Length: 455
Ligand code: PFF
Image (tube, rainbow, N blue to C red):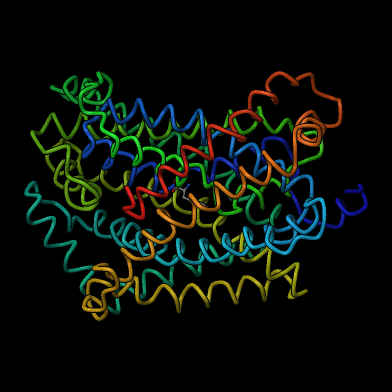
């Protein structure tokens, strides 16, 4: 793409901006809501070990490939495939449309969980969560999700806040906001960690997180870890591709992706170190599943001195994390609508928010009005999570690998990732190419088959 096309298209303005915005996408409810609960319910350190392998061998290469495609085409997730495919082949842009669908589906339930987090900030500050009994905390949570108006209201608030930021643009909205929020997130997380680690009995939580019991690594654990790696790094649905299209020409893509991956991993580990030592110190159950954040956490924090303050910090931090991820989720459909239908960013954002509000309503009402509506035994919330995480992301991931590994090819990949001869990273690129061509698609195929319960 030419410089001229670059200068008219919105994009990230500095190298730091690229880093924080991309990290903002990766860091999210996945680190605080999914990572600790999956680690807790899959045996601790053993899960962590396979998650690490999945991230390094599959997640990182796919992230690099996706970002590369976006920057090469400087276009949204659908148009990118039209531009970089060797001949006009109608099926490649379908990957972009799958990303469009996945983004709307994920947003539908993600905005609801983010809504609960916003609600919990106010509840924590008002002292309404002050109970050391997880049962009582569970009843408070059930009360929130069973209230249709509250559920919709919090979801719309989240959509309103994040949608307005996306409307402002890539540089003035997404980059400007993540630049302020990401450092704050790290500071709050460190404060929580310090508090949790200084509790008597914290060591047990650490050993739960860091001494693996290899016997607990079953095939199912392996596959769950790979699925989490996808969700965590925002890959398989054109999100990293869309952000890549805003990267600067001289940005070192493999280095940036690696930094984001490690920083994201640190946030997950810090979240684990803020949560597990406290959980053990007060004798709670680590394998509490997804209810960890909304039931166990309030009880754990209430049990410690200064609990209200630290509990409020915890939910503020989680809300901050959800913002950057939501911005990137919204950007996938917004870029497609704005660029392909010449809608302009404001209208494209508005249509996207409205679509999520409509599609998200059944998810938001899953514990009240739509609780009886079941498909394959799942309510709308569970169904949207299942369809996106277990089907669309892995399928998108395989197709991206097949496209890059078998159609796009090594010579073009070397040109793009080497910044047209500027960087000396050919060996690294060959390694990434090998992973993309063979290792990643085969492992992802295993996740997909598991998700569909075929084996
Ligand atoms: N990576 C985000 C998290 O871990 O919370 C979730 C996410 C964001 C998934 C963007 C997919 C995506 F495109």
